[in-house]
Length: 246
Image (cartoon, rainbow, N blue to C red):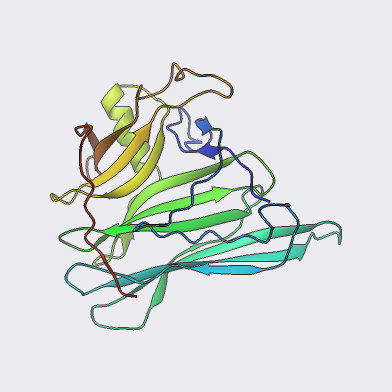
């Protein structure tokens, strides 16, 4: 059964995904942000029930030139020594267009030691250009450690932004390494990504950590090119531009 602390922060070392831990269950999106969470376990009992698959709906770019969907396979298997059973995920992002309607995998996330669980959340297409906003997650089944990365995919060039780009933007903003909890929520009309940012709390504490980038939840613009961040008004309204093809 998946029970982990969501690790989504800005680290002070080269291990940029190993410093900021927020305790709590992973939020599974049910709206415009489509996730591929799949598990081999019964969530209520923790009992291993076998291999499962999850697939998002197809999301089309505003101009109709590109389409994307993601899927995850959670495979139940026995460990190498024939002992206990375990669950391992492989998640893939598929894109089609504009010259071919055949979907092809542009991102494959395979299980790693101590990171056997993973998923891909499709958040939205940009209003102009062909940028796809993603939430790329990982965790270890049965542990309280996991993480997520906010990044974009440029369908025209086939390039992804680096996994540490949001971290770098906030490090530039505060002038030092810091911690926060990020959730990709969409694009602004100008084409910059929008993330919801929450304070980071140490386990068991009711006040944000001294290393937390923010003291309250709010929306921020992310410029992946620089990288740079700017805070948005508390009443900022999230817009969505991609079209659900289903």
